[in-house]
Length: 398
Image: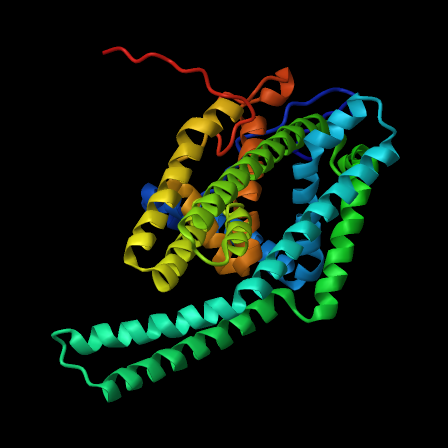
């Protein structure tokens, strides 16, 4: 007769709570200090997260021919969405609203390109003459300066400068080729972006419903609410940046015309496009306008152009934008600059362009899920990179 007790019958239909006290420790584990064990636990988890992010970035770069047109199509959709929804609310047929949106966008882009080409053709000879005159005046200033430079020294320095500009031009062309690829790839990407734009305007809701089915059923409400809040944020971002770009371009363009700076329309178009890269784009394009004024009009006109650039940006940022859009909640400008710089390091110009809206979408979606706002449908109660509603001003106790 065995001393082992007979096994007890286990009812398979009875609920048994899970066993939680199965942690196995060894003498080696106990010998390792607890702070070191906690640090190691954090470290391998962070390594896994970093590896997942790196894999995602590698896949994006591998499929950039698809990802860049997709991002362009989504961003243009966000730009057109308020006007598109306004036409739908006015009982426009959907096909007519799509046609008006596409034809209007293509017409505006074509008109801007025509103005740029027209002014370049009209002022090219004058710009060449002023360039030669500016170089001659610069030589005279150097000859009369206390640097004791000779004409040969100046010619040597100018040759070195031309060589440097040529090298940088070759680097920029190679960088642009690496980003855009061949002309066929550019045309293919543009057509793909146009097709994506039409699909999103025609059946964006249906596409999202199909995408939502890829997630587990229990996670769908949270994912749906987070994505909708993120989409509203991207729309608000695109609308605000369109407003910023238009104000900067019109103001700086009018200032350039009033001061007699050449290529005023190309400068205005460049400012408009550059303003879609927050902070960095406005600084770079404003510097281009000031540099043209310095080369072709002299130091005093350049100082006046700098004043116009600063005045327009301050007027837009502190007066017009809060009145028209409300005081959108943003993080510190340093964070925006770092996000733009990181995007440029990863994917150059497309990375800088899409960095802030992508970061804003991820931030809003994460806050929506982490705060539980998806259960109540309310705005996430946390600081966001970009908010869809103005923050109420609170009085500080003094």
